[in-house]
Length: 90
Image (cartoon, rainbow, N blue to C red; front, side, top):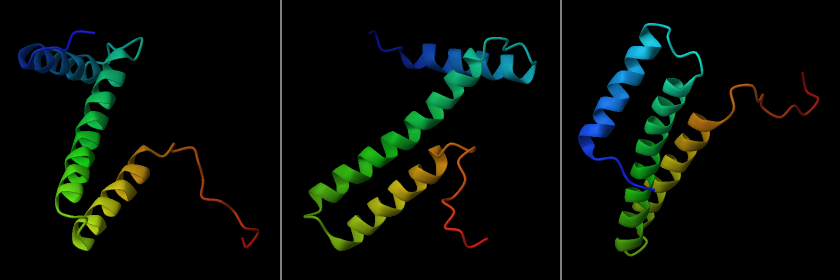
């Protein structure tokens, strides 16, 4: 698969935003492109923090930063229809 160059990516994201704003995204392709771009940026950030943690000699501070990043990713990408586990205490 060929990686888009930065101009192609910028243009595609701008057009996807335009489609969403004008309610012309009948097949949800723009929505999906924008979602995966957002998700990719967060995952790239997590990868950067993971590399930093590994190169830091596994420092406890960098470990804490990495765990917070992973928790943020878990929250961000959890299915919004999922409810927290119920333990019969309601």
